[in-house]
Image (cartoon, rainbow, N blue to C red; front, side, top):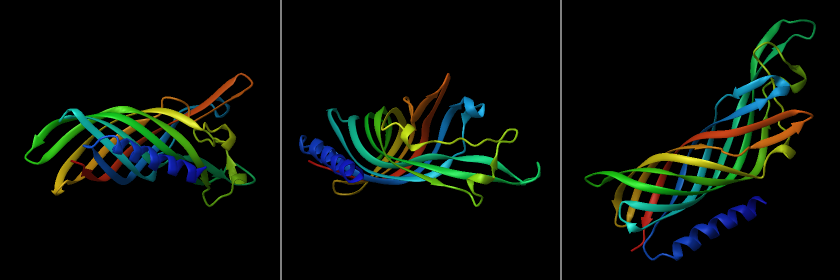
Length: 234
């Protein structure tokens, strides 16, 4: 499944670029800071979890035939999202608090963004851009990293909780939005260096299931910063 998704990603990006003789094609590598909003009535909790770090890498093509300051972009990115969950570890025989611990839940996706990019300012050779669009995220894999204490040690206590996510309840496709800004500067003939900042919240559910009358769901959200290498075909 993972190999097929990567192959489709490469095929889409390069197929689109070949349809246009004048296009910007590039690659990106960056950092992801992600979290998840959860509505979990079983744990009597509604709100954000704890932020975690991840990484992202991808390819993109941007076409600007309509206007030199306006581009339509298409991309394919492998992105690590997810969150951390905090809980209290108590003693076996009583309410003694031993420590506050955190588990990490990582959700990996192949993301296909489509966006509109506008160059709002040019300072000599430096371009300052803003962008907005939509994306489809295809779920790839799930990784659970527990703290030093096992799951048998976890106890619900006051403001702390533990929420289980089962792999079968994770949605295979998630619809989301994106908005951001970028800097672009030429470093050689037809070659530019870019720095992009992006906010990518889910609109659909990352996971969702119903238990009797309870509606339980979570939505990812992430901030991404990536370094880009951009080549302009002429």
